[in-house]
Length: 472
Image (cartoon, rainbow, N blue to C red):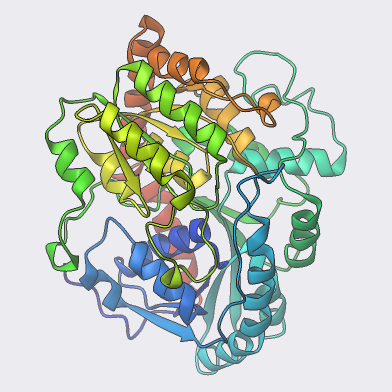
């Protein structure tokens, strides 16, 4: 692809939060902007920029050369180890890492803001949890700031209502197309220390607009409602998702094909359940045993990614590093040989979901995973773990009806028995109800694809580009 001349374009600085889901989303969006000929700068610690580049899927390696990376050097990260027996399941071991990284990024990012805005206007796109960058930019008249939300619009809307003590009585569209009681406030979705962290780093700062990794095909009603709230009136809101590619590029220069993709090539169309719980989840052994038994009893083909949560500097992690479950799953793998595959360590999720053999996705319901699964038209099996994930699971199962609940949020402190895992898989893959779920998932995937290929998301992306181009 030939890119338009960038010399006369207004530069863009993208500042992600140093966690995998945030890095991944904002790098995808940066590449999307770059593909339209815009000069994009991507700034984080050298450790996290390397992580984002290494784990990127869906783009050719050459596309990264169209972005200017600012790999900010920081000291070695302090050690951190996930706790598989944590009562709240949030990766609290990363909170000190995040504080450490933000502390060391503040001064270099401030200098970068002044440098990039010294001779021309600058567009700043910052992650919500990096609000200090927007605060610093407010004193520089030539900088125009936009907040990028890595969570869905419905979660922001629900958080707004709960934090302002507004009633939900006139907003029945939240998770139900009919007038029924709204879901209760989320309980225990994040521990107190994380709430404290978020209050410290997520605060209202001046910005001209908000960008969402969502599509009007998914959240049109929520975007409309959000725009009417007092805090959002007058702000530009752009629903530009999905920002990840729908057509996955195969770049053989980046290395050999992952074995799981070779395995998928040998499976019948729409026959495989993909099971993965994200980069911030560590599951206790007792639950792993039940998941294994449920997968085995279901008699359905599967790929199951088993890994602990990230530990900070992922380049220093020994992958696979799963001694605590290794012997258990070795026995399991022998029993399910030919029917399923266990992947230890990092997996090419976007490639797996885009594969024609994949039918369903059992997920923790992080928003990246939700968007990738829905965009590829696969049915979702929801197992929320923390943060906005319980709300995302309700959106998928109760509002969009493109998935089935595996573990309800009310059962979050219990070890889910294998019968529930088996039952949820069969519901989606075998039962008549599952046929309808998969049909709706396919239809939603087509609507999302249409929104990217000339529809609402494409139009909103162009509207954003046209808007910021006026600042030159």
